[in-house]
Length: 461
Image 1 (spheres, rainbow, N blue to C red):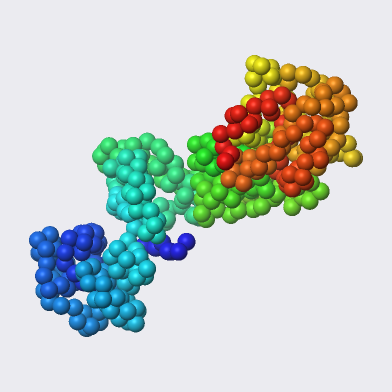
Image 2: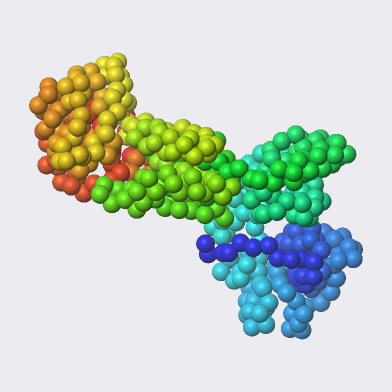
């Protein structure tokens, strides 16, 4: 971030605007939404500024800027049509430690004003650092249509009861759970409809009930994070990620997905790679139990789908043994994501009428699979975690009936901007120099559907 976002307390803010044309008027209108005291200095003023200056918060001084105008100011907007004047005032403001913004001149801006969606007391501010104003305007328009106009009522309602909830419920977690239930439920609906008395009564009843049962029961959510592209997350996965107190994640969860987790959640990495376990599975299971017993909402964030080579079943069995409540949120498994983004359909009437998912994880130097059932024509085989055992996979499939020229695809970092697809045949894929450069996570697809890759590859360059 080139610009650090923050919100200034404007209740005692002293703001200077140099210039009084229409550009300055836009800044004046924006600052007037706050309780700041505003001084406008300019030798002349447009009609808009003159009208706005009739407000008691605004002092209009119709003369040229002088150095002493900055003496007691906290921030200044410079909006004259003279570049030399703008530069001189900018330099003086920096010397006097006054926050300075030269309108429409980003290099001379110590701060920039964001695009604002105002649902006071709820304020959403966005910025592109001055590099994409049209995109920013587009995003603001989208948010304006999504956010209810009466969101401000919920903000005011929360403010009214904030201190009472703090005094009634012990602990940050208990209070957060309570507020989430209120905002997700009927009370919020009453507030939005303007049923104030009814909402207040229902809130008091809910708060009393919460105080009588102040023991917070933690839960665990096994959430499939999908193959890597954040856009492939389900709505439910995203909602639970935003509610989590603790997030336990593995190495297959992309950094872009982790960015969507609640900012103040504790993130615990338990990534596992072949022969290199950051935390053994039993310890991961116990970690989730321990955190849930503390009353935390625990999101176990797993790449792909929890129930497809994700050991989700094992983790749930441990939770059941300890009486921990849980939910499972399915995700797009790697086979679906990789095949779709590589333009390789897993089934096709002319190529494959069935598809099999298999693990390529090595055990004692071999891969313990039923090779005869896998090596069938008109069938697609998808191997998870099979990159290390690729030579064995190719050898066994040929030995059990597939022809040496059967197409095979290796897909690294599927669905992300780093996706790499290497294709070949069972007989030559291991000799391809591009294969030796691949690293996990890499998925293997075997079958004649791979021949469609060049024709259907929509995601690649």
